[in-house]
Image: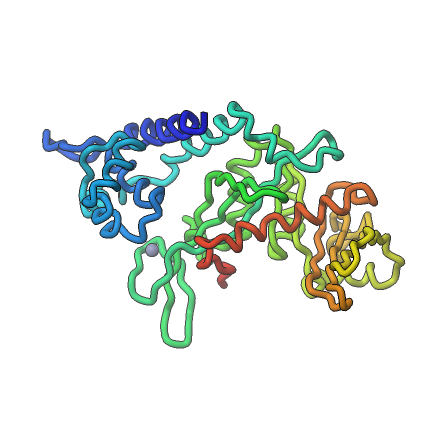
Length: 350
Ligand SMILES: [Zn+2]
């Protein structure tokens, strides 16, 4: 069953790669476009550290038989050829594969694991938005690089806003199409994660609205323009809200008795406390949006606080929902702390 799902996903990628524009002239076509796309994908799928390591692995025979079984490839083009063929391709061309993966997830019944907050409006999916860098160098750069001034010169960066289907209680994650953080036509200023998030919502938000998504993100996202953009595309938000960047909310919290929930703890175990308050203004002006605020605090057996985080959301917060909402808000840390994500770093430049 699982193998069939994998086969269908690889088929989707193969179809997509086969449809890519082939710029070669003449009949010197030992490889088809799909061979280049799948060969590049195989490097990542097999988790090879480099093209060279991948080629060496293939040469051992065991690697090549894996590639042959999984990808139906008997010959592998060299990395130079792969780069020449794939570099001119607009990444947007690969978006159909993300849609196919979602269809497959629904068809195979896998979507059930991603439905949370079932007590609220029949359940929601969680989509984590996160900025991530995938190239950083003081030397290697191109016209599409973002730049950052450093003491010793200029740093060149490629970054993207990653959107990922996540959930608490399991470590599965399904990537959705990314939005690249690149200098935009007609704008002098550098692009930023917040702008990319709004572009992502405008481009894709409508398509996922039927899944009733709750968008997760860090403190950078808990500002009115992004919260509004989420609402505009039929989504909900559950964003980290740091006290230091939300003075209006802090002021409200200070002057009022908060609702509180302390689930009974097992002897000698950590103590978790939830607090919340509904209907606060997100910022200080008359046009401020009204949000609900919640926080979770974890103390160890000695009473020392080991974790504390607070969130804002447009979902109803109460005694029956606060525990799961806090768990959902924390679900995105899993993708942040994944081993391959050790290069993830805040990406905001001015
Ligand atoms: Zn570049």
